[in-house]
Picture 1 (cartoon, rainbow, N blue to C red):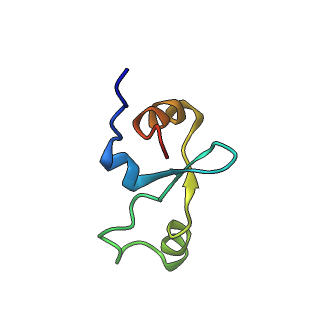
Picture 2 (cartoon, rainbow, N blue to C red):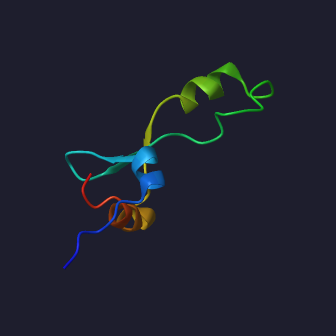
Picture 3 (cartoon, rainbow, N blue to C red):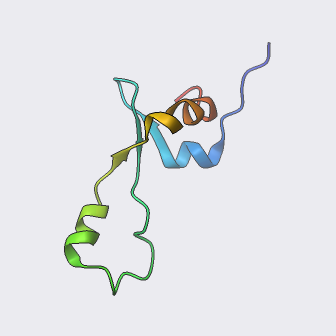
Length: 65
């Protein structure tokens, strides 16, 4: 059985924690920042965890991470 190729786009966006959760960055932080409040932008800096519905799919894309 050949090795599974890692999805390079997913590998750059997600990481798996020791407990098995999928860590991700926040969206809506790249542009059009003038209308967003400072509090909102500060909150978007923090990382978040992927939902349980998407977790299994992401783990298939990054099998060796």
